[in-house]
Image (cartoon, rainbow, N blue to C red; front, side, top):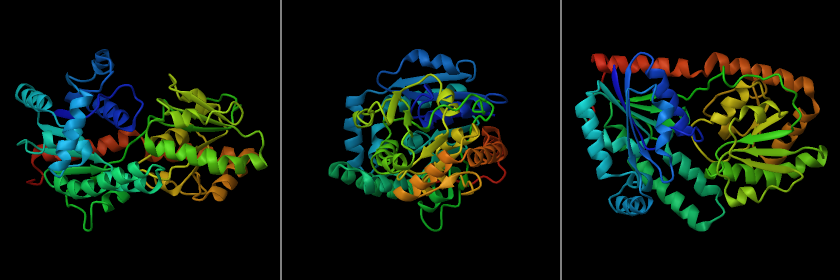
Length: 399
């Protein structure tokens, strides 16, 4: 197959979930197919980043994203009844680039990653796949519940409302719409669109593997620290949960690892209980050196890569139900799940005090990931779905 992949952000560096997914998708499908990648380059992004996929993709085309114009397009799109994020990534230059690549590359199938890229491919007379990934209605609806800023809560509530109207309509214009979890599918309405397919993320369990290093750290949280759900999670843990943990285990410390920490995250670093590293070249030393990994996520949707990566490294994890809902690990067997501050703190303390429990939970977590959450498994399922579409078997006629 010849596959055109259109992404709103170039998949490098691998510091965000969407970049990680697109990078691995291109790398997997390039093994046996020809893949053309088209994406925006965000402000400040180095065009030399294209080299990281030069040996994988048969063709790479990028379009610079100009922030001032993008904000104006976002506002104009809202007046037209579109979510802000869809208008933000609307570009005549990108539309021309996509048309040119289709004419020259002549793909058998086109794939748009998230609703931000959907409209460029929704009317292409070829088999069309929309990697919607998560329901933005669900994601922004949850953000609207917890953000401290009244203005941000209003914006998130508005974006959730517009996304709810938009997602089901745009999904119907593709032959297949891919979503990560059943919770995201449910957010599209009842009954869900008939073309929806569950297609979760994966993790490279050979890369994220137990290192055997001495675990001299305490607690670790990883993720992009400019992403609002991560900011909310670490602030909630630092403010309401960590003091409860340290009341029982005074030496407990939290290391926050991830790119672009916003000022309110950097301000958590106190030199005693909390360290904020910022971007690191490799997450594995931080994961491998910790006793327990946490994901106190209260808002968000889809699937948490940080949980997959921690479990793959054999780390015992304490997570919220929201963090686990896309993964489906069995609480008490593969990880510990807790919702409120005291329950979460009790679970963390239990693991910090019990080395045997940490070891057994981490081993079960690793086995669960190896069996069910490899990139190869999920992309293999997607590859068969795409082949059916291209062959004309089981395909739908999308509007």
